[in-house]
Length: 221
Image 1: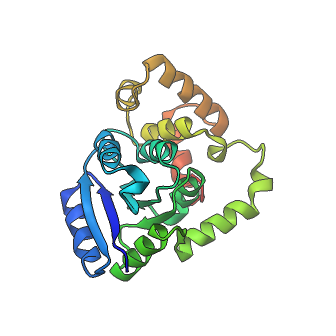
Image 2: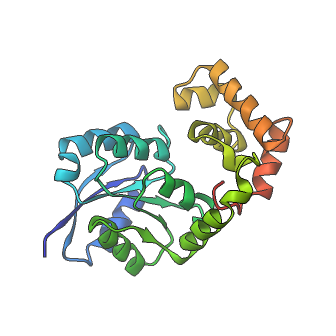
């Protein structure tokens, strides 16, 4: 059996160590590299030859310096055939659909049991797509309701960048802080904020936070 070479991208050392311990139970899986930041992940993947040197990347969705979804898009742009398994503490119903749409080969909650983690890595590294029962339900709901949502606005209609700003606004970040984190000018962030308020039908950040809380179970939010 050929060795599955994995890179783990997560800013928490305890998470990386835990993942390595879990994957050590699968003799054919080898963690060959780790990275803590978005730029470091991209640099290490490049140094390892992308999909020629790696079987898959395990990627945290919530990196501190660069949004995990941005890193996912960068990985898929440079190495379209490199499978990326997104890891998160967020429920599958909240982000699985968005991750799959952006090219992820799977989405798994960090609280998943070890057997599911190993199964997910094996699945995506072999070219498949790993979808948990909860993620499958979210995907089914998204497909089934796509016609109803079409043109209806709301958070489902946000672009990727608008969704990033939306997440940070509802996390209490200021326009300046968001600009620094996403490398955007404050005026640009303000423009995105105005579009978000319009699409969600809210008037200010307080209403936007309440909107996010009410719609937390929406599959694509």
